Image 1 (cartoon, rainbow, N blue to C red):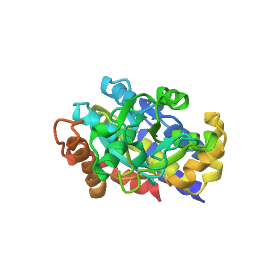
Image 2 (image 1 turned 90 degrees about the horizontal axis):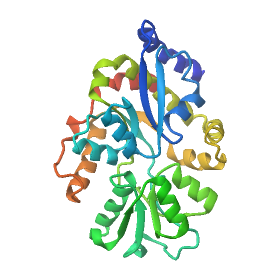
Image 3 (image 1 turned 60 degrees about the vertical axis):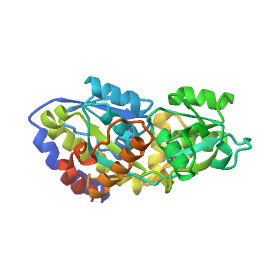
Length: 312
């Protein structure tokens, strides 16, 4: 029944595009949009071509988008803010909401560190401008600490993993699926997550020229992604199994992640804009961006109807 409803929600957009064969270049991060869309079966009979490009993190994805190598992609609110403040041609066209347990600061199983307070003077790996960086800053602010109270090692996820495993850093501030991989496969511990600290917001973003020239394709893609996420909420076990096969990772990892994440697509509304403004303000206070952006000016609300129709 759910699949039939989703198919109906996708039909209108497909008919609109039937006359033209174009290519939509989509950036993705490990095991995200493409994986859930394949698992939900919403990538069939697409009247345009999707050219997928996978990135290890948001920063290189946004660099590719800025350079015109891709037209849309999934990123966290923090790197999106970083990119928008640098003048990158990017707009948020849909929001991704989820619980905040999967953004966390990890320590090895045998580490003596038990709480954030134990990190004073310690070295934490994360990506510059990433949601992991955002979490560190929010935790510092909540505890009344200065930036100098911890040492931040800015590393890409693959390098951060090496440094963390080798003990070159004391902790790793990262996101899913890296958090669940460390928890399930290596018994790492989360000493804090982002509950009460950050909005837990990600975005489907797009270049303004793509919004103008490929609106039909973007609308159809968002409708399909929304339908896939709605399907995944009711099919966690089968989705986790499919995800594990696609990523060649034990099913226990995605099951750990997806059972608690409750990922869904949401339209850009006043609440999303307010949450994005809070991220902007955090980065401005800490000097990561030099100008205080207006969140309303870096989002596009015009895809809200497509999300509402596909969310069912």
